[in-house]
Image 1 (cartoon, rainbow over the protein chains, first blue to last red):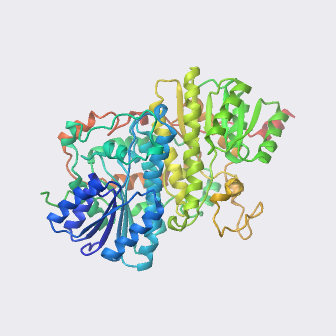
Image 2: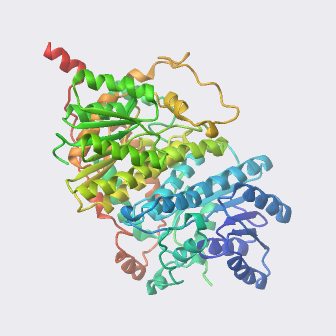
Image 3: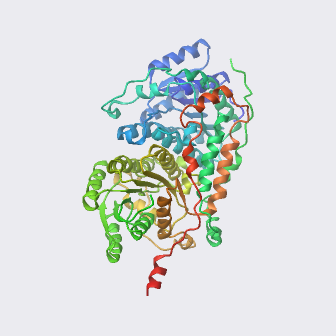
Length: 306
Length: 320
């Protein structure tokens, strides 16, 4: 989608962190932006920024796990700004803990928001995009840990991995339509995911022994993390380039390669059964999916940071 | 896990297809086998095989999405065979074929319930028991080649199978040093009946309103060639899973011909990394964040050779 000015974007988890960074990048590029978030106070805080800058942004209070509310939010977005062209499925939660410490409530919470919340966004907005027929794009926020796992984050890793293939399959499903898709896999960003995840957790999914809510901005290492504003610009570039994968941190390349090498080493070293291959080859994209060929390499940042 | 003899395996979706193939292979390698499945009739049919062979096997009707029933099934397995050593999260379904956006919310709920949360239930209920008895063990979860690179038209299935891969890779890290291994099993096409069994276990409240009537099982769909005879047999993939458990493979593959397709995806991902100078200061800090930028768990994977095994029919023929 080369020309984004005047287009309408709907961003979930848009009131803070990465979602807000994306909203800022979009608004500055001339887009009309709906920021959806569960936290009214965070929406209000974000809106003071946009109002000061006189940018066309509209806030909607939305729990992405509530399908009826999601449809209403989509109606509201269309009423305020007209057709929606860009959906950013960014709302997500984290609940660190290695496997033996996770509870069923942790899993239900993580799967509902990180996975079903994205499904809800896609099934709500995609039919509307296909109906209006104008060029559109769907970006879903996954993570580097959806590609190469980080210890002690099993729920987060598993849900983020699911989002990657969902996007890859959609890229193939939608290749003859006017809707593009990207999966956004950022490395560490200076945001407050641990804090917001606790705030939005509904009562019935809280563990009986609730840990303390982590304070905002705990680590001094945050200063070295990428800013939400920068990753927002990277998402914008990814939409313009129609990248299948939008990646942010080149220093993750070695770790990613280590995983790929492990996967390829695990193939049994045995002769290929040619007869079987001749058959499997003809089953759609089972053996080889050309959708991956479209990905090219983006260069250095081509923007000025403020 | 080198020695399997006398150990107990708990296998979900074990009444047919891949699960049954794994159960047979485990039994052939001297294990006691608990077969669980949501389909009672299929379980009873499967059990006759083990009885005929005098293999120690016990069948439990289990819907993997029912957490209370799962706990009872684990208790029952322990009552019958003692400690559980190997958990095979194999139960899985297909749903919502076709473009991702045409699938219904019911399709999503059904497939996530079984393929994702069913595996979570197995891990959260049985792994603590394995850790507690301290004799070591292994967890295998059935993903798919479609859990590592996407197949067009099966988006929901792909998403749940990627979930399983991400989950098992992290589980392998979490279990390091405990004597319990973890593998993600990624089979290519196997001669099974996933379409039919998926319809059979789908609960009423998650059925689509205008769903077509389930087709009666047939050997060959009209107008198509019978691909299944070229597919790998459940017995062979079962043997491959057992080998993977013994080798403690992180990834268990079956079909070497998928290598090029996976490479294509890997290359796409590496090409997508921005070609820009590394921010050395940031990289230095990130390096100290545990396994964030590099996870050594991947280094342990080595390459298995050709599978050495004899199909049962050949073995029986030799005996005669």
